[in-house]
Image (cartoon, rainbow, N blue to C red; front, side):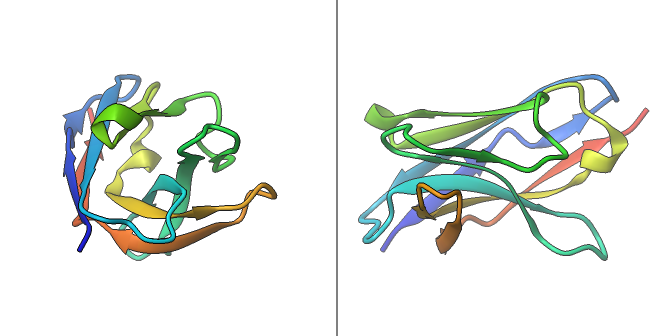
Length: 122
């Protein structure tokens, strides 16, 4: 009964930036957090970033620390991912997710968005 609607994907040159958004609607039972995964062709899906609704816990993949920023607007039930200083290796399908993030930094998926393509090329 939860729907995650993503937007903001597209193509950008290396070194550029892009902002993804994900709006959640409906009941998200058991969820205290939202996050972003990505999957490149032939590679395993990986967690990029996640944040709790309260902001008490935030998690980033080592490969994006200092370049990507996850933020939220609780009034709009929306999260954002700011992708900066993009590299070709960031090219992937990015998936919005609603889940549970523990104080220890463990994230558990509950619901998924459809994914949006981010392509970084010259």
